[in-house]
Image (cartoon, rainbow, N blue to C red):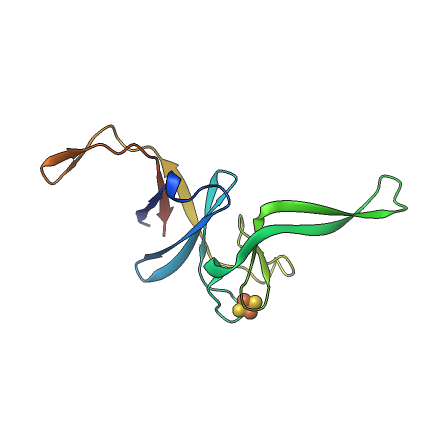
Length: 138
Ligand code: FES
C-alpha cells in the first residue's frame, strides 16, 4: 500500500470532484460534505468514466407512522453518483450500486486529509504549504 497526495482540500470543495491518475489507475476523488471518497473511474456496467457522471441524491418511498400513506422522501443529497452513459447509480461513500448493492460495486480507495508539516525542504529552498492534503492509498 502506498499513499499519494492528490490535491489540496481547496482544490475539491464540497460537492465537487477531481479526476486523477495514479500508477495507471484512473480514480475520481469526491468531497461529500467535507469528507473525501475515492472511486475507480470506471462503471462496472460497460466502463463509462464515472467522474463525468452527475452527483445528486435519491428519492425513496417511506411509510408514514400509521402505515396507511406512503410519502416520497429525498435523501443522500450529494452522495449518489449517476453513470453518464446509462444512469446506473452508486453510493459515493461505499461504491455500492443503489439497485444491486450486494453484487454490483465500484472499487473504492482509502482517503485521508492530512496537515502538512510547518516547513518542507524542496531542493535547497524551504517551502511553506498552507493547505491540508487529500491523500489516497492504493
Ligand atoms: S456504463 Fe455505466 S451504466 Fe452503463
